[in-house]
Length: 633
Image (cartoon, rainbow, N blue to C red; front, top):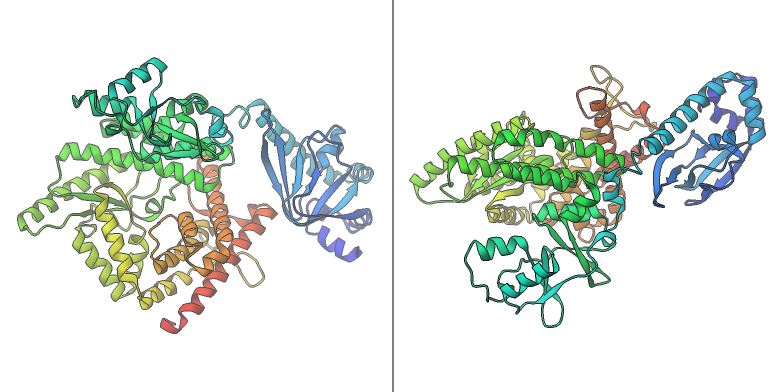
């Protein structure tokens, strides 16, 4: 190794940077170097203690610990300039964690004997290592994890670590689709089960009958109990794979408003999992929050329930849930709450004069909500040729939307500052007007028209006659065919929002004001990725509005996404999760949440990852500029 190169490196790495020249040369002279290919297990839990303090020169490592049930829980990542192995050296016991290279990694090494000499000789090293390793690592990591059981005893952790097949009812009771309803009910009573899987003559599952089906479709309707059970069974069958984790079953139950899901293993019926199974497994699951919402019949009852939803984010973070999973669950719960508000509004104002569809816009439309976001919504209602009916609809929906706006405000959803809400008359219109809006925006792409398209083209039906929204989506996709000029204007607008990276790979941060030396993760990190995938989705007529779902849908339809799909997904997940973590910390500190973060507070590995994400955005923006430059640049 070249001594000068080592000295230059150590001068940037705490705590060695605090040493004088003689101390630095002493450390540099004692170093050796090792290379670890990606996925190498450098140290293993319960294995021999570390023989050296390792300083990461290049690459990174993952530190995990095995839980009581044999699962690995990641507790830290270390990147360039960070160290590991000191705890093992000083404790002289078996290695307490498993440390794996997450990339091709090069480490400088100080052997155990020299580590002890350095700590004895330089108090600054002793103080730093005590703070950074023992106080932070030993007390916080082991103390919290073992004594407080944040991970091992957490019921929320089970949701993400237990496979569906482990808790699904193993013996599935079935009945042929020709079986009379009465006989099916008697079988359910005899077996003490709440659901019965219905099969055809070949033994293939074709439906399911539940207690609720018997109550709502037979008893309340006075139907003939000798009818074949296929007449009352529920379709379509919703299923999960036995290897899926339980949160996947939770998501499907929330999404489809069901209480039973079939479990499939290797293409065959494995069992049934119920909401009761999941609640018994986890205790206070998102399903119980959904049940709380459904049980409310007035706005005042929804207010305390709505305040609890954000707490789920903290629970999910503690298990290391991916950002995409967090936003899915929060969006499903918020959707439930909004639908319940709309149901209450319908009871208050009576049946609407014409069919309508409540649509969500913005992050709600993309199913990317975290902490409570602004209200972004609109109403599409059915066309009518009768002026009297049209006037009646306008009057009804004006009062209706105003009530919903105030109700959501009480539940913690602040109004949209730009007034993109159904309570604003321009955004509460019949289908024909919405089609005209979209047509004008596309054919005359003024700055305001392009801005509106960024907001409204992410619309998603949330409640009511969803066919109205589907027809509008069909119309939009048809309008966009061959409209390269509009897409060019859209490309021009979104590529002006460049990532905050300078020529020398430094972060471009705010120069003054309240957020001096900080950068906006949402505007400069998440929004460019959202905008890129929206543009590509509009180019290819993709109907999905979620950024991650757009990536999946475009893999086989768009050359750029095909090449960069995994990188785009990882970048979006990482920046979103970083934003969520930052906001949780702000809440815990009693501060107002925002989207700003000081990059100096990030670890070296986090800095490296977010820089790579920004460079990816910049590279794809360059592709977009090249593709459209002949049109409007």
